[in-house]
Image 1 (cartoon, rainbow, N blue to C red):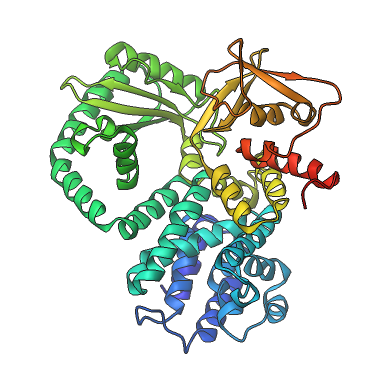
Image 2 (cartoon, one colour):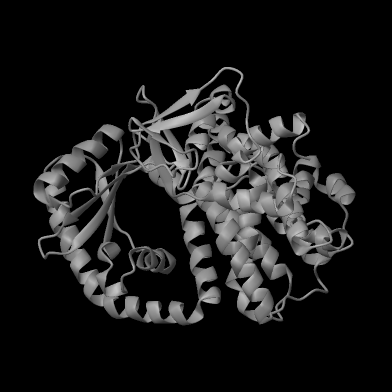
Length: 480
């Protein structure tokens, strides 16, 4: 892509912003990396160009795209942060600094180096969410070209992508990016299983596409009569999501039911429910398949209505209903909300509120001193398999799968967590290491003067609970 093509793509969604700085970043990056090549033998600059192209897909602002072009100049060339500040200003320099790795020679173990780099990157992200979006775009291109690296590095990078980067993209609601990262990691971590599943999916695709087209035709006819504005898209599942479901259900691919998928977009929340009513009256819904993520959104901002119905041909079809705004959030996640902030007229009044959970979570993570504990806690809190637990008053708390009454207590209020002496779940006493299940009603028993115990650190799953307990124990000199 030439610099002119890049500027034209940027101006398509930001016509009132002067793209001259983009041209300058393009040329500086190309010159700085001129003597370098990738493992594939290609010019190194192709990587910088690819990262910027992904950021343009997300319609990010000018500083982000410039930082995408320049993200490796400090790490891999004599160019310094000081020079970046002088040439491009403090904003772009800070974005580049946020994604620049610390020198691994500073650390005694790989765990320590990895934890330190994630800690630094997450701290920068807490200040500016664009840091992590640039880093995810960087990782995406590295994964697309992973086959050119030695096998041991392929395995290490694919594993880090599967356990940290893809879950982080999911946590930020960047579903399209998350799915591609997962499939690329799957391809390198389990090549035999990947090839086998890809062959099976391709073999069934022709027949399934015909069944899906037939269902869509019947669905469109039924929805037309409502007069409600809508559009219907076919939805294909990623190979990794199919494989994960096979593992969870211990079933072969031929028995995985919901590979057929349809997405319906409309203009208002009320119309989502109206269209759901029409669908359930025309097609038989599968018992227990309905989930309402509009009234209770996922922690990554995702909202949709999910249902599974039986098509006239007997196929099971998974349907998602959402507004166009919800669809943009589902595809681009936090990047979609950043776009509003950069627009001339439109503003997302809730962007800061939506970022608060991220900042709070990052603060809790910073409290963890051990590199291994930091990485394990990060992986746990990126886990998006949630359980929904009710207080006795009917308030809902979303927690990661495997969370305990202690996690719930700290989610309700720090003081309740600190004074916890026991718990009742569905009116029965349970131990504090009990794994909560969706729908449980949890009542926390407290006693004035009661304090956290050291063994609680083994019982909790969430960074919030761990941070609060550790902070108290450190204050009392019980832990370092």
